[in-house]
Amino acid sequence: MAVRGVRGATTVSEDKPELIREAARELMEEILRRNHITDFDDVISAVFTTTGDLVSAFPAEAARHMGMNSVPLLCAQEIPVPGSMPRCLRILLHINSDRSPREIEHVYLRDAQRLRPDLRSAQ
Image 1 (cartoon, rainbow, N blue to C red):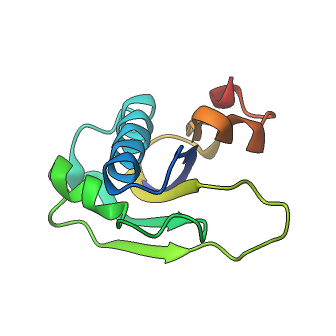
Image 2 (image 1 turned 180 degrees about the vertical axis):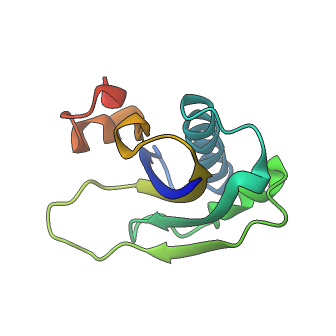
């Protein structure tokens, strides 16, 4: 097995705790589903980032509520690049996997699909 990174991003319509947790849960579930991850023991760690306009909740709370209680989780803020997508939440998931890098499916939902139109998972 190799260590692989899986990326994902989504957007949130407003800075409300329930919307941040809902978007994070939806994105995490889709990353897990598309990459056939059924056991949290295969998850090494996860990094969650949000743009500076999402400050009302930690998106990692969604992963904890899903049962990732033994997985190291970290939240951080994206650098404030002028013109970047607002209200954006990103996840970088580190996993143990037998899949090749080309088989890993990165997930972009909602308005974040515009970030990576080159990926089939953003369609």
